[in-house]
Amino acid sequence: MQSRFYKQDILVVALLLLGFGLRLYTIGNLPFRGDEAFTVQNWVMQPLLSTLQDIIVDDPHPPLAYASFNFWGALVGTSEVAIRLLPALINTLGIAAMYALGRRLGNRWVGVLAAFLWAIHPFEVFHAQDARNYGIWPGLSATSLWLALKALRRNRRIDWLLYAVAATLSLFIYYLELFVLAALNLYVILIYWRDRPILKRWFGVQVFLGFLFAIWVVYFSTVLATQDMYGGTANVTNLQTLLEYFFSSLAFGQTLPYSWMIVLGYGVLALMAVLVGYITTKDKKLGLLLGILIIVPVVALSIVSLKLSVYRPRYIMGVIPALILAVSIGSDYLHHRGGIAKIIAMGLVVSWTGISVISLNNYYHDPVYAKSHDWPALADYLAQYTADNDLIIQQSTDAAFGYYYHQTGSTALDVASPVSPEQTTEELEATVSQFMTDFNRLWLVSRPIPNWPNRDVIENWALRNMQLSLESSPGGIPVKLFLPWVVDEHEIQSEPLANLDDIVEIADVRVFPPDGNDMITVWVYWRALDTSETPLKGFVHLTGDFNPATSGPLWSQDDHFPQDGSVATTEWAAGSVYRDVFRLPVENVPIGEYQLILGMYDEATSTRLLTNRSDDFIVIETITLN
Image 1 (tube, rainbow, N blue to C red):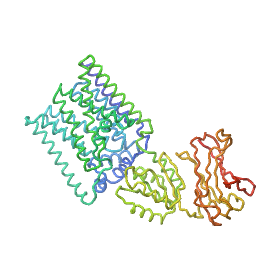
Image 2 (cartoon, helix red, strand yellow):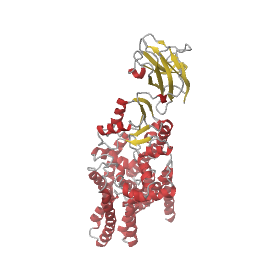
Image 3 (cartoon, one colour):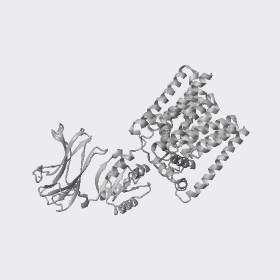
Image 4 (cartoon, rainbow, N blue to C red):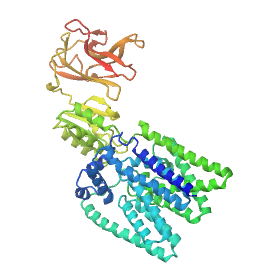
């Protein structure tokens, strides 16, 4: 017997190591996402008192959330690995808590299975590698749940004291632990309503928690009186979202194809109904406990989300222990029945594990499910190409952009806009118009929030008033540069490159290689010398070795009238300089060396203008495509 228990203890240690390893694997590979960057900027790098005065309404969390990250950052630093290590460590505590819960409610093997399912749980791993309190809370909540059940069973002072401490930590790390507390209170009232000694101690702890929480609420209210309340950035209550997305997320994370998520959403919901119902036939109290722990948080969040836009699965991660326990205990019951029930139990565990592994693999290795954008690549790109008189508007209001951009030392001003869906078209247009009286060039970076009605206002203003001169995608993040139509002579940085038949001078050329978008962009500065008798087209061609598709050296091209037809060579003003933007797609061009050539021709006769050397084009540069 002791040998068997020893083996199970070894398994628990192995599961702790496995779970912690999964939470460390690739933990620093991706940049901070927006909320993580906000944590570092406002929870870690600011004095704690400032955070408690300035942030608690805009980013509402209990005080322990701010304090824990503030202390941790001061202790270990603010790198991606250092900050994410805090939730990784505390979330790993949940493995031990799930073992203890499974053992308490079932047996040692139930505990081992519950610990294993927590160790490989994709949603837990995701948030354990996230510099927010969403990964810390589940580890504390599971521990608090175990200590609550232990105190109810043993009714010893030390157990009640430990539960009070764990419940306090859990509640003050994340507000929606209140939903778990509500579920436990309902369970205690239904089961222990005749046991006065138990009820007395239970509600003594609840009064203690309520007193501490009331102190915080009073302070929070004084701050709220001077600021606008956070309204949430997610969705409001939606039954379809609940059925199709919540339970699949809570069971297997959010790194599976959406079609899978829908099927699994209904599947997990049906499975929980069957398992909890089956467990209830074996143990009514246990079935009631699991059912309440699942239903109460879901219903509570649905009610709250009728007013606030906070309908996201991560806000009820306190449900996950009950889901895991239902699978573990139900599988154990089925296994002990033998026969086909045993096969069903094995199939359930294998299937649950397999889906979890697929989801984990997607999270770790599939860029489609990457938790954040490559903000450092964007920051480096802007540092290379921006100037002091540029304005950068970050359209997704993502804190991660500013976090990485400001580390480059670039001096171009960056602002976020729009900052809320309520901003009107008139307000946004007036703001950007005022800005552009002080700046020459406008950079629009990242994608606007899709469901905001004002998402396209700034870009539409720029398209009407400025020249779209460059589109790129460093790190997969879209960037658009808009320039004034009137060319500043300071843009001309070289001697004239060629004179074409005394009609036009090629004053300068700038080449932008592909950067995440399979497009070469070329700026050509035409200086008009005279008008032409017929409209002329400019061209930029990419040439190289023989191309079977074109039966010649041509691989890509852009031919158009100056400024896409808005300027005619038959009418342009002599001495004026026009910036012309050429875009050459290269997604189907093989790796190798190529030449960019430039010229102008009469479209009607295909006759090219000649240079002083009688060439019908000039070579801009040799470019290597990798």
